[in-house]
Every structure is written in C-alpha cells, then in structure tokens.
Image (cartoon, rainbow, N blue to C red; front, side, top):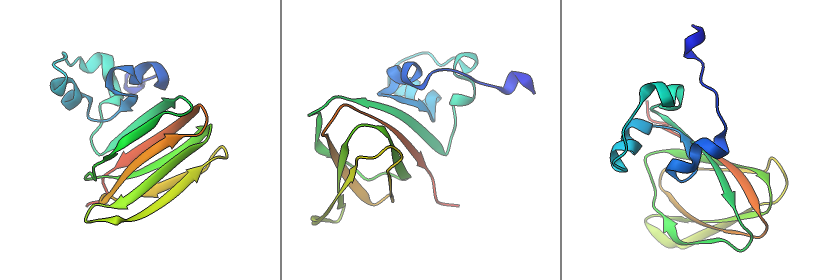
Length: 134
C-alpha cells in the first residue's frame, strides 16, 4: 500500500538517537523518555535491523570499547578515513585493526566482538546491525 512508504534524511532523522535512524525506535523512545509516534517514525521503527548514518570529525576517537551485542554489524565507508580496532570480548589481548579509506570499503563483525575507532579524516559511515539468530 502506498501509505506503507517512509521517506526522510538519514543525517537529520538520526539526530535523536546518536545517528541511528532505523531500528527499534519505540524502545529507544522509552529509553530516552520520549513519546513514541508510530505515524512519525513509520517503517523506521523496525525489529531485527538497525541503521546508522555516522558523521565524524578528523581526530575524533572512541576511547572506550563498545561492548559486544546480540547483533552482527557492518560498517561501509561513504567518505573519509576511518580506523576500527576490534577485540574479542573474552580475550582482550587479541586485537585487529581495520582501516576503511576508500569509498565503499566495509567491515563486518559478529556479536562477540568489541570495537573502538578513530577518525583519520572527516568521515561519514553507514552502519547496519541485524540479528543472525533464527
């Protein structure tokens, strides 16, 4: 049905949720004490997948490792130079660095991996998380 079409701008729509613009928005609203309006969020309110349009400045760093989650993730470089450092949640000594520096470079990681990052240039990156469990 034509009413089942949602449009918007990822950069603008993600501002409320740290650049995440598709995902379990109803849950995110509850966590941030915001009213949930199904008409406003439309098909962006989705279970099983989350999408982020990340905008970062040169020399920006995530110092603390993001914990592992219940989702597999993929980040795709739109523009810039973005370096991830990954480590296993149960073996902090085992690390791997991945640099995304050409448009379209991507990295995919599973649920049991923690990560941090740094920006070597102003960067934009699209990140998608989804559940692999059936």
